[in-house]
Image (cartoon, rainbow, N blue to C red):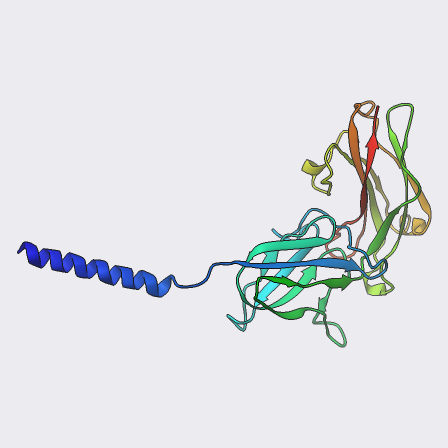
Length: 259
């Protein structure tokens, strides 16, 4: 009787092992997908908000459609960096339709006449695959001169904001300009990424802000909480229009040493 029970148990174990082997034989996500979002006007990486991979509410995100698995795949999204680059080292080897979404003219416009589709069909394999995109930012946000540390402990900066695209359908009115301040060089529109005590927010209604495009805008950090403490501060400019999801375009980040 013991031999019968032993044989039954051994057979079940073999079947279980066989079953696991059959359904757990796929290679893990060991491919690297990387690239750069390039500003068509400057030919440099486009500065971005903190990544919008989780929901597209901010920043740039990379959209993946695994077409080798399904004709109607569920989108996957990858995070991007604030300097306009992205890299993910855990991507499955497969064929993908890849595009990018952010504060720029959409790469895919199915309702346009004629339809626009600047996505890329790419086979990801062999270790590292590089996919770049050239985009038209909604706005260009540039520093004018060097930020100045004032005697009262504030920082004054000057900016020039211009259109990043000539396509009128994507030219909304300028509504917001920010000067963000942070002790860390990772600044975006999320309140956790900058010091709200010293940030300055300029708002405009109607075409008031739009009239300032191409001019020099002066903006100073807030003194509502007093002078900036003596240490290294990173500052960044941001601006947006009322187009679409109202995403921000950004300047690069500058360091100001408060002594």
